[in-house]
Image (cartoon, rainbow, N blue to C red; front, side, top):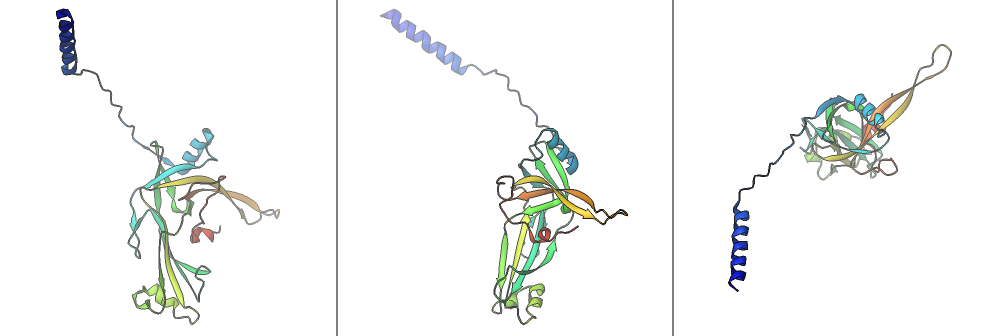
Length: 221
């Protein structure tokens, strides 16, 4: 019986020793590699080399944002659109402002990809809107008041569409085709332009599920 208690006592001592013993396990912390700046075309070639150029991927836009003069929201890229008419507001519109410049988006903790605003194709739902009629016209900016000078205009709506900093978007490359004037032999010259579709919703069958922004909807070469 004494041997039994002695055995239990020794086990308890050993357990206490192991619990109090300083942990000397070496912890290895891997340093995060810095992101590499890369041009849009070079990034496309990278995806193509890895058979990913025709597949959607996730991106986050980074860099300096700009504040909208209307909603005071901050965007990397945005458009301010004025719709107006008698009743239906989606038919007639003007682009009051769009941000231009060079932007960047982060990809897979590996690349910061440079992109010019003309290469963007934003498929993004309206982020902000405000309607105006005769009852609140006194609070409208000058650009809105001006369209009400037309007798047929009864309503107007300001809308903002934009890409926000730090938000996850879905992206996919697209080749747009266009034609240059014919050469001396009378044949038109077909050209392609590499652009980036950016959507706030996942692609379905490689197609965006949101409408294209008004500025690029009317884009011509």
